[in-house]
Length: 75
Image (cartoon, rainbow, N blue to C red; front, side):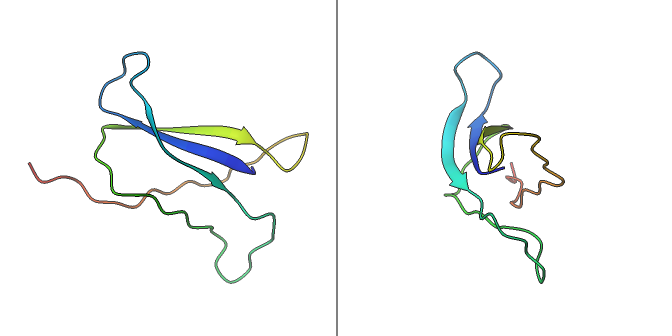
């Protein structure tokens, strides 16, 4: 995976997802901390969509783990 985009929405109607950012991974093997961190502005949403845009290879792309850190709104 090279480039990806994160999109958010509060309902599932067509066209309701809005981009919160496009990100690019580093094409390196990480040994000490095997994860790459990406930051974006604070948002409030019910749904998150992950969109793969490109990869470093023309073949198979592997995404082994995805973690989103944040907090729930106390309402």
